[in-house]
Length: 340
Image (cartoon, rainbow, N blue to C red):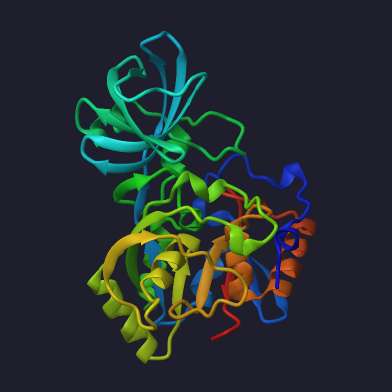
């Protein structure tokens, strides 16, 4: 039985990628093939997939979800939208010297007001005076991960989105997808690799470390996902043909596996709090493209469940020694599940 300390590791700060590469597909790829660890370029993914394989990608789009504002009292406020509930209402983190009370007005970005509602756990409901998506896009700031030390600029606004993003709602990017440019997607399509999409709106909880030593005591953050019928059809066709269902990122994997808890994938939308740790049996995904994850994170536990705990420990040690770039703007891995 694994505990939290089993998922800690030492990472030199200089291994944390602070800036994206200008060329998306120029990143490195650590191919974990059984006992072999093979250093490649990400563009080699074309050679590692075969005609009939299915790439499943998360088409969520990152919101400009960070705001600075002022309460009616004059106090400074920082707001991070966590989830859009409807076209006028959001759940948000609100950082201030004193938490707002229901009915309090907050001026955001010196542009528009929101009204605080009831508290919902660590979040507050905020009601906007106009269309949520329009106001966020016009006045918000892109929320880069907490370990990236610069404020988002115009380059980040392009590079911290996948080229296929289309459904606004995330506060963090599905970063494995950042390695794909349109030319690479075109090469994969020409080879006969199939594409399908899910949507999972990544929440800020993705960056939160687990804080309890006993993993069963961890309360997983929830995220909204949808798996459309055409994706289900594509998955079933690929499985019947004996090809790989390749999740692009842990978010795509969580959506697919959340939709497969009955034993067979089904279409639909729901909140998921699926917490995947070693011992989990994967029902749909057989290969995974993923970046390198934070120590003590639920995502490190997920990839350890997927490829094997010892395999991931070896792969991470190799990546650190070989000076791979880590986290959201870093390099990638290609993994095959050990229980398929």
